[in-house]
Length: 572
Image 1 (cartoon, rainbow, N blue to C red):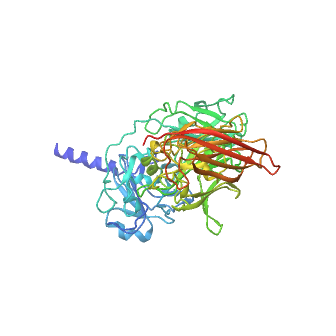
Image 2: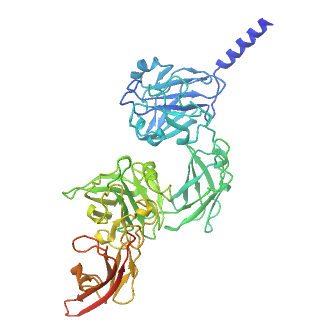
Image 3: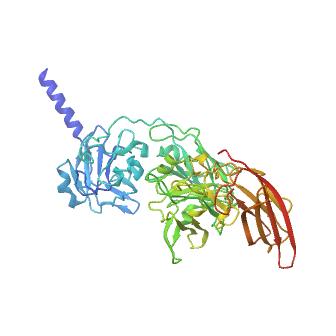
């Protein structure tokens, strides 16, 4: 009996060590990444990745390769990766330092691991993609560790395709666990179906859909799983795109119209864990056209963030066009007038539809933690934002042909005058249809919204009222307390032609002049001036009824005077 048991155990060991033949997706996974080894915590100053065998059979790595968007490495040497074991892969020069921690092999042309994030994939000798990850600096979930010296570790290797929700910074004191079970190892099952994030047309007949996680590639390649609105219907063909398989490309029979917004619905799809697509199975899609001047405008700007936050620039599509952010560039302009720090808004096709907002920032998570973001998907992350100084600066928005779409020369003096500390308070555009560089068209975000409204309509938004008559004050009662509700009065004017010159003086109830609002201001045919409830000395005026006296004249000698009343009220 003892002899039989020993033989059985021996046979089991032999079977376990037999190299498996052709591999399936996720048989081996990338489960640890050292992308930024500096400053050193306790591991060698070298980049490396770790592979783990998730099967019950040994797998020979001979001929396997690592790859990224720019190419693939040389082949791996013969190495039998045993069941539930791992091996470190690096450059030849790093092998000696890493071997002391566990099994280590090298490849030529090892991919350069970008600190901020990168697409990596593992390819079997038959050219099949076995695993791919597109890691991000946000996956660390730790601001200190993301600065270098710590690895990214997969939490649950049985859940290999959930992206950032299944990764975090290592907790081991050395900064990582090469050759060992990950320090954050644990159960982290995927119980959520895939979500359709966005779609775009690359030409009138070809559409790409982007999901938030990899799909079952066979189900994703079923054309009947997709329907396009406005009579387009079911596509002719579909295919899941490697290496991540979180994208589907399909071809339609009827050409899409430029700037027309379509809706795509996806059904009968599942992720690699078998979770079926649920309610988040539709998105807008269309064929973009080039942006022209003022199609896309700077709508909100945070240039003086709190120490724990970052700058952001919110853009608003005020046109009837579909605009592809891949073709848009955010920049600044120096005091010498030179445009610099050019940054693409997105490396991928990302459509901004009419009436939509997009927020550009280095760290979307930081902005979301500081402000309410009603549309958490309306962010595009830029590795390094252009510099926007705390006192004043210039935000430049260009298209990829170098044409300036919008340019804002902001000044911290545009903030609400009674704010003591402007840190963490964004500047909001009052009306996106009025001139960008009119100081009267900008003010501080309201306190009632947390001093910022990234991804949705500004708290201080006020549309062009197009008042009837010559002069109209709106609102009739205002309360300049920066709560986001009637914080200023607008003196709206509508003249028969442009070229009038206007003087506006505000008097209190006793007839004393308290504010010269405008003096010899040249006007367009219509527009408005703003009064924030302060006198000429930038001090609050008492609550009460005030008279707005307006005098207009033009070069033809035509003159006219107006008297309007407005009530100033305050809560404090």
